[in-house]
Length: 235
Image 1 (cartoon, rainbow, N blue to C red):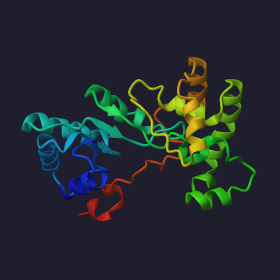
Image 2: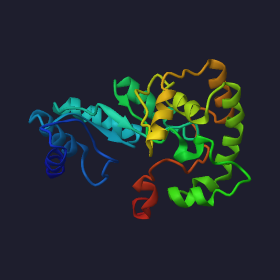
Image 3: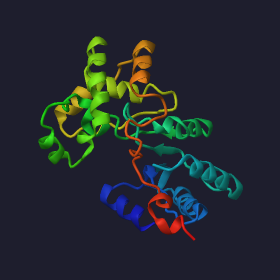
């Protein structure tokens, strides 16, 4: 409640159109979270609310609790999604489609690797230091990028346009977050907003990175506490 009040004051507005929580708190019952968010909706301070990086099982539970308790439900989910990170195609996207949720993926450019600036055999240390990510050292990601670059060239597209068009090609995706850092980057990405990938191009992407998989299996966007906290796995 305090966070919303502070946001309204900083934004100088009387309501927030979409308020999203980031990652579920395993120590807080989902009914408590939904109850607080419902109070915010009914008081007019927010119009709708959603989640970010919530596992499919938690989304199903949340919708069940909302229906059973007469509470407002999650309307959106904001997961990581790109050509290099496709794990949400397995469960999150089908669940979101089933419950009529909007999906707003972040990271469609693969932490910058799908811009075409990062190549195998070149010194990527400067870029890595600037963006504070070790993704540019991942051999599996570099291999995939080297296969995607000629595909983009054959399709007459830049790598960013290929990546963004892929992210919004799935019927379960509502829109993708651009993540532009400069006006030049924003203008370039907006120039490709109407790009539509052919079935042939999408099939070739599937051959490079199979549907439902991450190039790096450990690249989940968020490590679930029940996997990282050993006390939750041992008696």
